Length: 138
Image 1 (cartoon, one colour):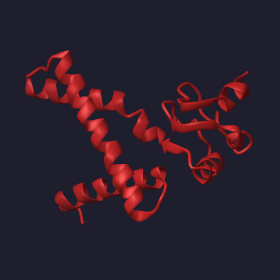
Image 2: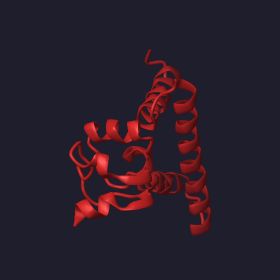
Image 3: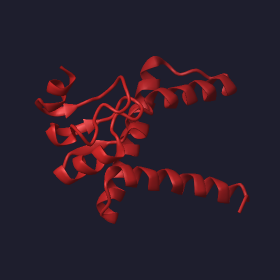
Image 4: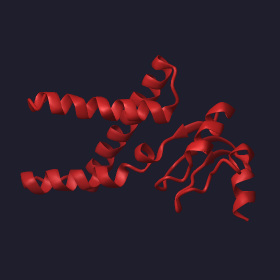
């Protein structure tokens, strides 16, 4: 069953299909060291707190599943420039972007003493604020 799957002892648990799969009712049964949220919203807020208290390393959905939208951005850039990358170059650029994003979030989480989800929001808001400032909107 789904409940049995979520409670298996494993290194990585990657909920990748549906939202609200890990909830306050089953989060305490999760035995993974890492939860990488490949689906949109697979972990509820209540479950997020439980997993954090258990010491589960979480990669929030809007960080973990950002690869697709990042590659869409790469396509947009290439189409606007009329210069196209090889598939290998796309994967290399994606790897660098996603790795940097994870390290930025993890580094801020450690520095500020917050969980990865909070740190990811902090990084995102900081980037938006920087762009707003650079554009002279504030």
